[in-house]
Length: 242
Length: 197
Image (cartoon, rainbow over all chains, first blue to last red; front, side):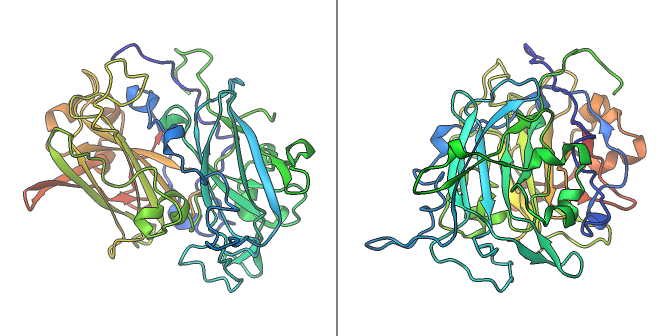
């Protein structure tokens, strides 16, 4: 092997949800049942796809504008405009610059553009709900969107998903890959949601954004802060037997 | 700043327009990656990787997303940590949802990877996401026609012998293209081996 980078600390299974969480019914047939087999990281795991600023379209980081109808003036999506921003760091606190952040979400009425979403809340002709941005030199990302609505789902009678925005990040390697969901502070549906509650209790608050007045844009949008912590290099590279 | 790794959450059923918009026909966003890893200038043996994801009832999952990451035909990764420098005509990353094929297959067009180092057999790193999976899972695809290299591969040999077959993609020729079939079984007697990477 060539000059090898340091291995990553293990995924913290005290923070990540188990693959089978029976209250979230779909996990019962879709989660693996056998224990994961430990893998000593090689160059295959210490590398991953590199996406930078060149993969961004001009409106990718503005979901209030990237799906609106053309016209003079152009259409405007309905709902509460928000700015979402945060810092991407590794678990040792080091900022992660130039990292792709992909996001997707429901509209203000709780309806996704996705063709299989049959919830009878209205689609918004001026809102698409997908976008992306890349962190700056300090690891900070930022996008503008509409606050997503809650929506019902079929997990159990009268089940509702809390307001949330889906996030996808790569980090520097496939070992740091993360797909997660950002929730909103004070949402009463959080305590009823088997997806959120599938997360170990000590780590649940890491999924909840904070209202942040400094991120608001006066006369335009409220601000929420959502920081993301990815796996970092292992403290003692030769440690084995985890 | 909150301490500790941000927990994973499921990709959910509606990832397609955000993560694979072009594959699913959503024109408002471009795709950062596709299921075709090749470029016109790529050299090496062209291969197709296809398979399905099966749940515990043996039903093919139609809302999974598969990502693959692989070395180029010389065994190099297109990443700064690979000091050898990757092939600029081959990025090595592909992404495919299982919701557009009538049989719910993922189908990747790629080139066969070379061995990354002296110990490991040629392989493709596979990441599995789907509705109903709260944390993504990692597996590896090995090639059935690399039996000699597979027999020496330390990762494959770390897997109990009776489960190794779940990581071996079966080789067939279809219209002059080498097709490697790699089905992923989430549960059951043929449950795929997943790794704690």
